[in-house]
Image 1 (tube, rainbow, N blue to C red):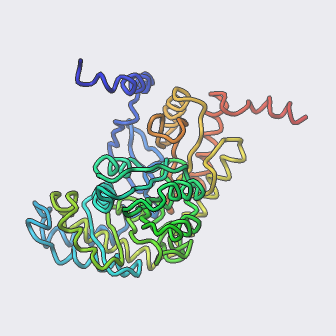
Image 2 (cartoon, rainbow, N blue to C red):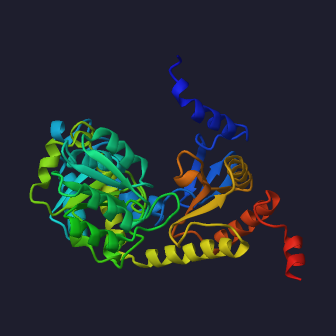
Image 3 (spheres, rainbow, N blue to C red):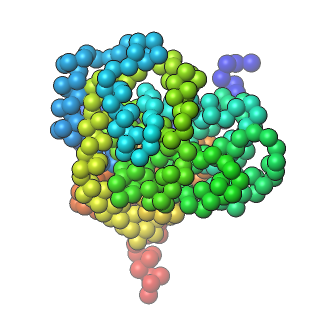
Length: 407
């Protein structure tokens, strides 16, 4: 038996992907020009697949903060905070994120993936129950592989399905930890968080919500779906990432639990990973200030969401169920999605292609993510290009046929 025989199905899918001539999983950006443009394959390309929701990767104040920190404290920490100690800026960042949410405690991780992996796998122990949404992110599923708790899945965004599973557990001993997401990363839909929280209260379950794609984008202050739903105080743990709206890398978990700090010596993903370098911490701290000081960026982001979502919907594309900074465009099968993605790149527009098994319900998608600094002209052009490719691939009816049908 070969080492990779167990991946035979994925190998076949990967070979299909590569028949297009481009490998979408190994795209090389020869030069990034701005939050919305890069040189790919020797040509200037519009970026609509980078999760750079506020465009802060090129924010002058964030870059200046990073440069100042790297000149003062060097390029890295060369070890974990348990081994090498915390820099003053690590502690300051944790305090500022906790204050942002009105929580008492915060831990910062080197990636958002590690935040989910470490916290979730540690919270739920051998005699506990970990209940997750069927469409959960890979980091949540990977946490399930590491936990000794019994893992129970419920139907996507279905509070009644969660309630049925909690009811079935009855009076079995052990904690119940329910994991949700603010905005789901493939289809861009939101959890009905208020309803979920009510179910969790009824059954005494703990709530952990991952606000990776909703930090900054949702809520009057950018605190995510928990702010929109008015349930920040009812979410026992809030996890997020610095790699989307805040334009850097890293992750965090906040909580009011009085024993929260025990996680610093029980979460292996925190204990045994080198801590964030000073430059990243400095840029994230400044980005958080920008999120609080510039609510117009959120307005611009949602204006752009409307331009792209409504524009594609009007042309007849099948999209995710609701407006959001992630716009998932449904395509009939894997090869159509791959070919469509290739045609988009040839036309100078970069989006993500997402195909089974990485997608919910086996759907094939083009996954687009909006940025506050996209211009309306850029997005109108994208709708025009996608419409032309959609007709070419038979995803949309030919314009002349549509006109004839209308008559």
